[in-house]
Amino acid sequence: MKLNNKISTVLVYLILITVSGLLCEIKPVYSLPADDVIPLVDAEYYPAVHKALTNAKKSILCVMFMAKLDPKHTGGDEYQLVLDLIDAHKRGVKVQVIFDQNVKFWEKGKERNVIEKKSEYAYELLSKNGVPVFYDNENKVTHSKVLIIDKYITIIGSTNWTYSALRKNHEASVMIKSGSVALAFEGKFKKIEKNR
Image (cartoon, rainbow, N blue to C red; front, side, top):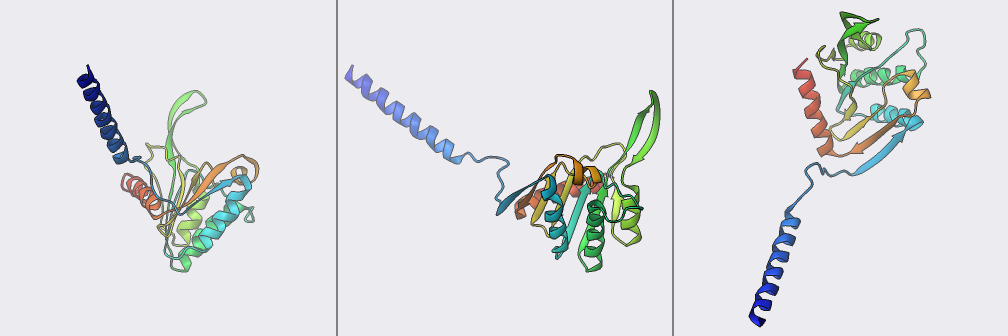
């Protein structure tokens, strides 16, 4: 009887050591290091993004579902963010922008194939000023709102560049300072660019 208890105890210890050893080797798959994570809620978004774009030194990648500008109202925050991209391009920062376009299949109950480009004026303004800008594949909705700045800062969240998003809506975004996170999102940017 005593021998069985000793064997049982040894087996329990061996199992515990094995399990704890395995647990030490498990690492979260999506765990990437970050130097800082800053919530950008509602009105906090614009000043933080404006500053980040103004301070960009080398590169800006922008994937934006919608940048809705009104040419008659050039003083809005959404307009300024597009101007920030143009200014960065003019000072030598490598800027690339992707906007969403998609085929709208239903219009007033009738099936129609209509290309919907939500950011036409922003696209024209950027293009006219030499900023590389293009639309995604029309058969895929690019609902992302992502900025990757200097391969280090990633800004991601719900905020479109529209008057409503920047002035009226409740929006939630985050600024992540991490080369690893920026690299991961840069890969997504290149995938959208490749498949356009």
